[in-house]
Image (cartoon, rainbow, N blue to C red):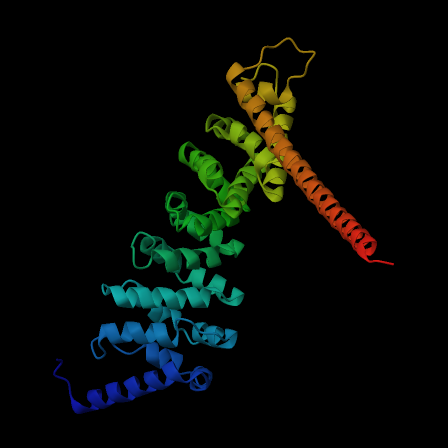
Length: 363
């Protein structure tokens, strides 16, 4: 128990009651932000207020602010200056509550640039390494990556390696790939992938190969497509990571959007080979894509087997669907025929019974 004076106790009592009102009354919460009360609440000294209570109240009152006007008012009232120390607080609950609040504020487009300039991105990257704030920090980082002005801050803050590492976590795969796809849409982001080519392309290829979620496959192949289209010098590194067989399989068996993106990526590889010099080192995967029947150059047997297997698998699935439909139509036809025959037989039996009964009646 803190030994503080009476005015401070009264201040804490008023603060606590106001926070309770804001927690349970949405109308009071909206009017409080209009009156500029966000900054005083965020400026309460943690020495006066229990940090656990402060963290819980921040989560309840401001963490999920439904009104866009309130989110804008919090940023304009310089609430971000007080929020950053709370995210770096040693208390776990305060960190989680402050991260939830930043996640809510980052959802508003007008706040994204201000949050990025205020130095929150390195703090979010640091919080991604902690279990209690990993999910909210990643979601906030995704919101900030939508704005192109924040991409450079994410790259310079070392966010790309942590995002690539998060792809292997099943619960974070979708959002981490979505964030990386936002980075791949900019020059700075694509250069960051090039600097980490020994790891980045292997992670993306594994995501396309093993992740069953179609949306994750589409995002991973989108990153490969953007890099292959804008950075032809990265083609060799992508091919060395095994991109060609995976893209071929995806172009046959993936979703409609994934097939389209995989085909565009393969087309970028093909055009790069056609435009390259003859003395440039050619890979075995390029021979499969670009060699025609008139060329005498032998193809790589292993890659040919992979392509043949994919084609056979696609044909087999198509034949299965055709056979299933044919069997269904035959079963329906047999059922219709048997029902007609049974109905006809019953009518015949009724007519015979009528004849026999009519013959038994004496004239």
